Amino acid sequence: MLVDFRVKNCLSYKDETLFSMVAGSRIRKLKDSHTIQLDAFRLVKSAFIFGPNGSGKSNLFTAIKVLRTLLFNFENLNNVKQLRLPYQPFKLGGQQEQPTEFMISLLLDGILYDYEVQYNATQVLYESLTKTTKSTKEQLFSRQWDGAEYSYETAQHTALELTKYTRNNTAFLSVLNVFNDPDATKIFDWFLHKILFLDEANRLSSHPLIRKLEEEAFKREVIKLLKIADFSIQDVTARRVERREKNTIGYEFDSPEVIQEVDIDLHYLSFDEAGAPIGTETINWTMDSKGTVRMLHLACVMVDAYNKGKTIFIDEFDTAFHVSICEFLMAIMNSKRNVCNQFVVTSHEIDLLDQPLRSDQIWFVNKSFKNESELYSLFDFADLQKKRGDISYAKRYLKGEFGATPVINEYLSDQYLGEVEVSEQ
Image (cartoon, rainbow, N blue to C red; front, top):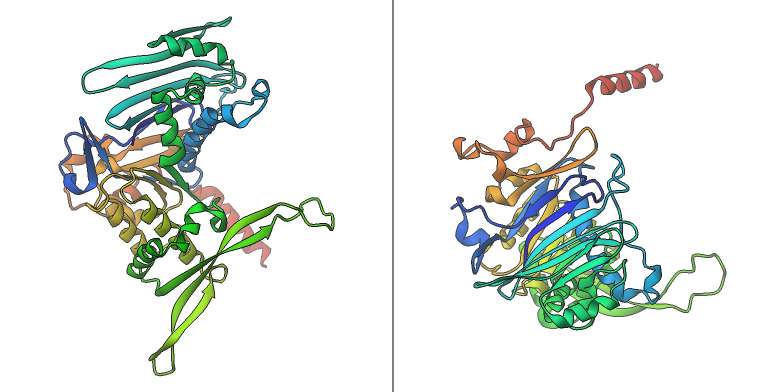
């Protein structure tokens, strides 16, 4: 499970920024339902990130994807010498020559792993992995570039032998994984199987989860969620179809590449003029609403992830959803039914701030006048406990007490509106 994630000099995050799923030690509110106790750690089941458009909410998710790409690139390219590192520094403050830095803490099978890496456009500059159990803390390896060569320190002689396979532009952790190091394998398994990003870029028809709608038991659970959310869907029919990839060059011949996809029919009750049900009618999902398709996808994600210990990132959570649907999904995320999954969500829906949430589950992203993203938690506000508990977080947010709100330039706005009035005369 995700414990902490730190990022520096990546995308809109210039300075070191910490995102944490660790529960606040002094918060008793909703402790039994909204948090998970794992050995010495208590983690929140969900985190909700609010902020204006363009502030950097989505960039936090992208930064984790960049780290994943850095680790997996070693296996994906035949010519490692030509490997381009996924270097995307902050570009608006002279940081292009500075390294990107990541640190991620994962709790896997009762063991805490802290992995840190620093790199620039051409090579990895620093890397380390620490393993902490109930009784011991051990640095498994460290790797440092001094300007001329690398120095390594490893806990095991076999790991030291593998340094000769590690090029300047590859992560040593990736090499350990290729050679089946058990600790590296656990971390790579998390990146490969335990995290899921749900955003608008997903091509739903080719997503592996949608194919599971062909399984009757899986489909029944998905339909159950759809009915609770008042989508009135009685049944779902899934079938495999083949689609030829469109030729983007413009020639007349078809591309030989065939893509396996799933076509979905949604079955709704139909009624006569008196309101009596007379059967069902079928609507292909391509003809249904954006909200219905998004809810279908999210329902598949939640059913598939049940009790699997996944960390699920949902960008633009409220897109195409009524606030009541968002509240229902939040209730699932934070319920006792959810015993080991984590959800990290971005949203613009301010009303969600007044849902049953702990202050350590609420985060804000603000963009400074220098276009730098600043991430902070509601838990960090020292005077929070001094306020009356019945005062709305949403109202306080809109008043600007927590920052992270868009600032409309009134002067330019009045000028623009005045120009419109003049042009209409």
